[in-house]
Image (cartoon, rainbow, N blue to C red; front, top):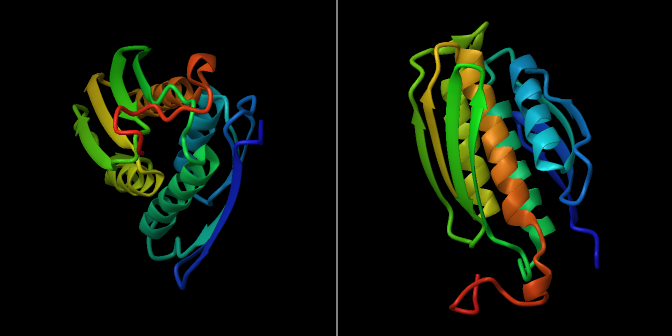
Length: 197
């Protein structure tokens, strides 16, 4: 089996990003974006999806975090799409219900090639320290679009805003781990009744 890995780069006037993703890793992160809370969330995504992820990003953080967060989502999605190849033999679907202390998140995703994002966050918090939590929706939208996946995120409840978003990242990670797994019963077969993804 060929390694399911990809390295992607993106350079714009706003960001410079180099990212490597190994779908069949052990959950090893090496992440530096200059945005502390975002780095923490990406580390959780890596650890709980059992991927290996290296991200080196610099951006115009003196303006705000928006370009860095969104562009990392773009590049991560591109890497996932490339690493999946033609998606033959994968389980395709993943879902998880994840508690984080008093918070709960529900995620379902489909690696079937049709990008879409549903994003419902119950927690009313807007910031963690100086990090604007609205940027996470932009991250997930960019990721789902370039990865060509259908992603439904529902953060159901929770009083602590950190726990609420941590639960989301972990639930996405567990869902992705389920969906990217190779199923020996359909080795070499596209997981689609259309025979096209």
